[in-house]
Length: 393
Image (tube, rainbow, N blue to C red; front, side, top):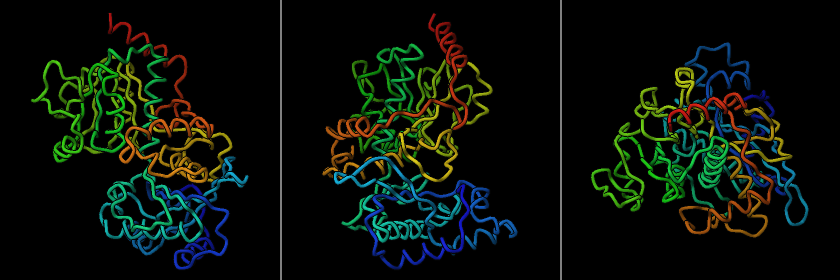
């Protein structure tokens, strides 16, 4: 939250949760997210600062999803109308969401109802909301509205990040090993399948409770004990076995059981962190000046104005989950079915359709940076290239 919320907005949001608007032609999509901390809440609702933390959280828990800002794009429908959306905030911090999942899921479903009642056809879930609703399983079914969690476009963006960094850092991907942490996350699984047979080795890591699920849902993934010399499929490993051998780490989790530390990382390693909030710590980057940590999953769309400060370097930048919401809205307006762009429902064609739409809409990956605000300059890149050459020699 980076914008003040007035009483009128709060009442307007409640009215729209209960009643459909008569003007439904101006909003095509909504994006739902939540504040990262109470400090974000205080920026939006300053009066809450006067209360103790426990009272503030009780007040927030009684508050409904809020219409926060209008998001404008230069994209058009076939009849020439601008494709615009609304940002909706669920006033709850991460600990509030995961402490009471029934409350959190009710809030998300209210936000989806709010989206439908203001005319949206596509709804995106951002930040930590997808796991709260089990990737969408706990969203009430409604044929009039499509809900996306952003996994498909995030997969495409991470792949483009890998290709871009490999190019500027002189990395031969076909001879590189990659470690994927939080591999049971959907984006992580899709990236592993996209990378399969394009790199030397892929090692998959997750919490013990997720390892069986990981193999059961993906027959191409094999357990380390079952690995044979001629099998080049991704291997499910115990964390952090052999992580210190990989050239590129892809991180998709912030879970404490899978925290990457200095002894886990080889010299000259490239780390792409696709989490928000960040799962890779600044302390690791400070301890190891020989490695490079790059934010993953960020895209830029020329002409995009969220009228909201997302804490990124430029207003035209966005996370992959928001980008996918806009992309699906554009595809829907141009006659495509949302399932055509879903990796799980269309594994052979989703990637090609997303790549086409990504380019045609004018999307690009955002300027590489670390920890949201530190752009990768020539000095940084030169230092990593030099370190990698020394290691390889």
